[in-house]
Figure 1 (tube, helix red, strand yellow):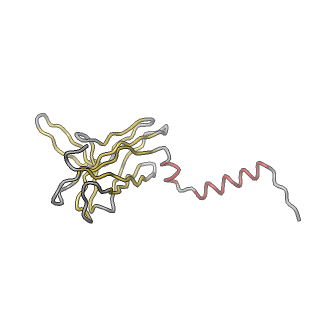
Figure 2 (cartoon, rainbow, N blue to C red):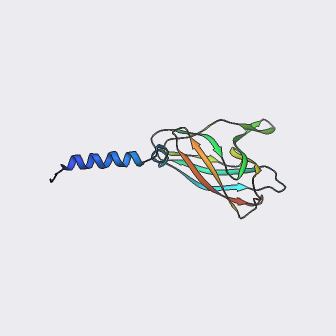
Length: 151
């Protein structure tokens, strides 16, 4: 028995099959990317700070809502806030990456606070930090570890 399929039916079947294979985070995360990811290393198991620029090429704002790392026991999103003559670090629960724009996680502003390294981390190493977003996307991002004197 021979069966002929119409081009529309074949295209529809192929599209359904591909959609079933795609993970929602991969589909959503395609619009998000990172650049210049690095960690400012400090000696003696002192907390380190992570910095990165996140780009959003989608038409919708997306919030960075969580950070984690297999290399550190604790990873958090902080913001440096100025109170006149002093500055303090404040834990924040999200940071918005604007549509067709970037979010700079940079010294003096937002930063990733990294504590309790699970293994020896030193300048020249690479650590991975997972950035989780409100649209379900997750970016597992490599961060270059640099000494305090380098940026």
